[in-house]
Length: 173
Image: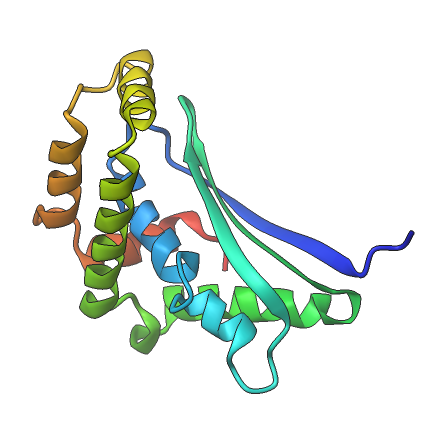
C-alpha cells in the first residue's frame, strides 16, 4: 500500500557529550520544537497557508566523538517542498536575522519546561539509575541530577547569546 505521508529529517553534526554547548543545544531544541508553543510547531501548523504537518520534534543527542541535532516531521506528499522550505527558513531567520534570535523570554520558558520535565522524570528510580550510569560510563563529572538541573537552569552561564551562537555554529543555513 502506498503511504500517504512522507517523513522528513534535517540534521546537523554537533558537539560531543563532553562539550558545554550541549546545554544550549537542549534549550534550542525546546525553543524550536519542544512543545506546542515552539517556533517550528507554530510555523508548520498554525501559520496562515502553512498547515503542512501534524507535529515536529528534535533528536538532540551527544556521543563520545560528536553529536547530532535532527529536526523530524511528517507531511503529505504534496507538502514536502513547502515543509522543508519552512524549516530551513526558520533556521535561516534564527541565525541571520536579529529580530528572530532566541529571546530571554523564550529561554526562560524553555528552562521552566525542561525543569518540569526533569522533575517528573527523576521521580522514577530507573531514570535516576540510567542517568547516573551514563555519567559513569562517559567519565563525566558525577553530579546529583537535581544539582545538574539547578546548574543548567539557574546558572548565569546559559544565556541567549550562547544559545544563538550555538544555533549559528551547528546549523547549516
